[in-house]
Amino acid sequence: MINRACFLLAISLIPLALWSQEDITATRITSSGSDDSRMLVPPPVSTEAYPIEVGSESRSNYMLAGLTFNTAYSDNVLGGISAHGPSDVSYSIWPSIALDETTPRLHSIFTYDPGFTFYQRVSARNEADQNLGLELSYRLSPHVTLDLGDSFHKSSNILNQPDLLSANPVSGSPQVSAVSLIPPIADQMSNWGNVELTYQFALNSMVGATGRFTNVLYPDPAQVPGIYDSSSKGGSAFYSHRFSAKYYLGLIYQYEDLLAYPPGLLAQTQTHSALLFYTVYFKPTFSLSFFGGPQYSDTQESVLPTNHSLSPAAGASLGWQGQHTNFALSYSRMIAPGNGLIGAANEDAANTSIRRQLTRTLSIGAYASYTNNKLLDPLLSATVVNFSTGGHTIAGTASLDRQLHERFDLNLGYTRIRQSYGGFTGIPVAPNINREWVSISYKFSRPLGR
Image (cartoon, rainbow, N blue to C red):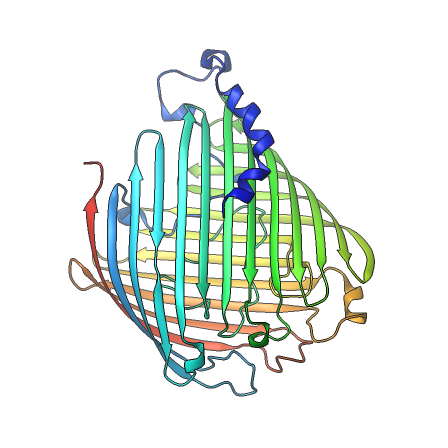
């Protein structure tokens, strides 16, 4: 899965690896090992999202295994395929395993959550779930770091996950979103992969390169009429300069290849962006970032002439990680793959999350998002039927976690989704959903490397 993203960096990895062999003293990097000499990777150029866990919950070097039982009620399990979608109750079971190991040069995280879900009324949508995640950060040298990440999700319900808040992290980068239009209960597979190499070649200067890809697939199109497969792949290169310990300024070049796959048609959009970014660190765990610049695109469909456009791209984000509270907020305006639409779209996206540990055994969390998509090439409306030219999605989730025992946890949550995408003839009503759930988890952990 990660091979495609790695291929995007094949050329850039070689010279950067060679540069890492230079004499460190020539770069004016201090040899004392002080953390003050190491630059941070600002959110606009980082492949990592803002953390979900609060400081008192963070841990490393452990193996975690467990079992989760979940029951959920949804007032519209088919998400608008009929004017009055049926309500239903589902039951899920998820075994889980997680490995987190840290050494002086390597930090690796592996998670695997398979599962099964059964519906009382809509038994045809019973599912086998797959949730697989991998994160790896490796210091090739004191000033060269390689980061890799991959996430795979297979389900018939994007809302049906062991930890819905962790599945929606907030990012400060100008990357396109993987999912914005939330389909009804239907078979779907999604995969996100990224790789990043950073090289601090001077006391206050860093360069880096990234590669990434996303895929969102619907194996049975009859379950999602008017919603289409999409994918994206791309890469970027950046330069970052640090002014004092708090201020970072830099440049980003970004390329994206965005694809949509409606039947009998291929819609492809290629974008080139030149972005300026600025980040201020009030503290190492409290930052404010901005990015902006022009974005050029070429859109080609098999039945239409090429469409060219030049539009602004911009975004801002804020992240704060405290001992008992984490908060993140982001906004971006970019050209995105459409995420279910017939082609690429101009996307406005805002996301926010908060998690607060109230006591040693009680914590609360919330996530909210707004996405507005408008089809990039309006000529598609004259040639293809049964599709939407755009719309918006508003989603919110709130949850409460209570530790009942050293190994038992109780989770309560509520999700509200409101969507409006006009133009579908196959989906007469946009999927608006209310969902409540209760989970009980049994978990045990063992230390690693101790």
